[in-house]
Image (cartoon, rainbow over all chains, first blue to last red; front, side, top):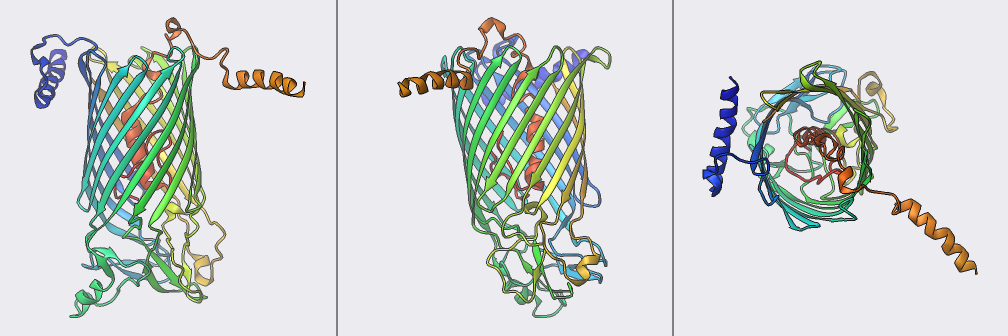
Length: 433
Length: 74
């Protein structure tokens, strides 16, 4: 059995090396510094009554004798289920048209409108090459390609790290650039135009639906700059500080999201497609600290993010790695995880619009850019199996609480839930060999 | 005199703030820092999976590394 496991690694090493056309194929026994390391992980994410996703990652890392590092990563994920379309719940049955225009769906009284046709599969490839340029300078560059049924993303990144003071301090300068193309089924909806609802079989339907569309695709670009500083504090402690500046331009709407227009009694009169600005500038400050107690390792980080959509967010993330010796498996450990997140709403976020008011230029009812708090609690359990390969399990619970940022709810909207909470469970298995 | 006074105040302040005098370790004191679990991104696979989840469910991304694009989930 042990031999069989080792053979898998040997076979994979051979296959990957052959694929890359490396010359050291004949080398019989790879040394510690000239060998492949593989990680295989599968994650299952499931929200109560909403989206479920499965995601698999296969990562291959090779460290060469001269300390050059090649990292290749394949990610495959599949998503299915229901997602909030942005409309408000009503005391009556509501009918919506699917994003493709092919069919409609109904939502029961009092229920948050969810589009249950959410379905996508994604394949992503990443390659990263890192090499020391001199004794104190390390350069790294990478490529990214990700393809979904209706989405293509191409990316590049590069960074330079300079070490000084006996490698106790490191400055990092990085950039990344992404070019994304969105080709949603049914095309790009025209912002602020009413969703067409009616007789799908009417002879004029296709023409009328086409009038709600702008075209078949749109794109966006994302450019990020990252400045980082890492400092060894003492034998037990390490800190990192990052500043990042990110600018996104182009199509930033979610083509599947709508906004309800209600009358003074809170009754929906119309549903229009959302309209977001075509640019966004995000900035963030990030601090992380690693601390090694006698046995336990504490990892705590804080991120403050703000953008020109007036969203501000705070994230605290902490992990506590507790070695359990050989009590729960060879060199086992438990790692509790706690994460807290809080964000304010974008300035154009509205849970609904009032019919009596003029249409704003920008509006979105997507709860993900509304006021919200969220927390994650989790536990990871890892151990060594098969001659030092690590097997780890992770179980997490994620809870989102969208909150009212002070929007007055007219009439019937008082009787329905406008800010439903979301609960999700995350299960992950990782094998490193 | 006044400038001198300010400087004498400022120098220890800078030294203590940046900790130039005492920060860092000698190469032979890196036994704990060299452990895998002490690296700033100890579980890159977990981080990648988490980033994807939170990128698609929240308005923030990046910070630790690039926020990036990469999926149509937001």
